[in-house]
Image 1 (cartoon, rainbow, N blue to C red):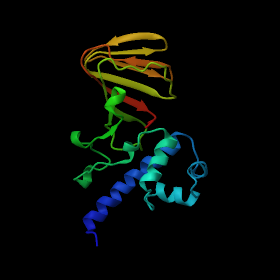
Image 2: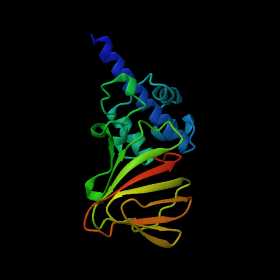
Image 3: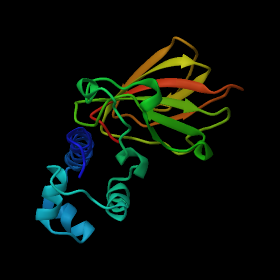
Length: 195
């Protein structure tokens, strides 16, 4: 039998997972019925997952990740040893990683979860990495260059930014690249959350 502490921590992890799945569904404007249909599951099961009453299997998490267009790593909470910090504090060594070094971009979720009105991400762009095709999201975004050089094209205009510079845009097409020989670290804020 699991100890009360183990059950509490497991329950807290399940609540974070449930909240993230619910937030992603809402952010994408999907209903429980639409999610259930796409996953081949019942509406009741999806509802139970979103309320933390059912725990999805690894294959279910893969299906959720594919459906929402997010990396599966987003669904794996990192241990929060102090319960009073859960949902409030993210320690440097306990961030959820999004992406891989093969893509030239590794992101870490700085926000404790996806339940708020914005998300904060630490993005590390490898030297020479670039987003070749324009992206456009229905979001307001801002960034602060913590280190390195970073180029961002917003609505067709390129801007070269360096350490200490920042930017903001809303709903405009954008591309980015790291023109430097060192990684560029950007603290990126997105509202509403997209991961």
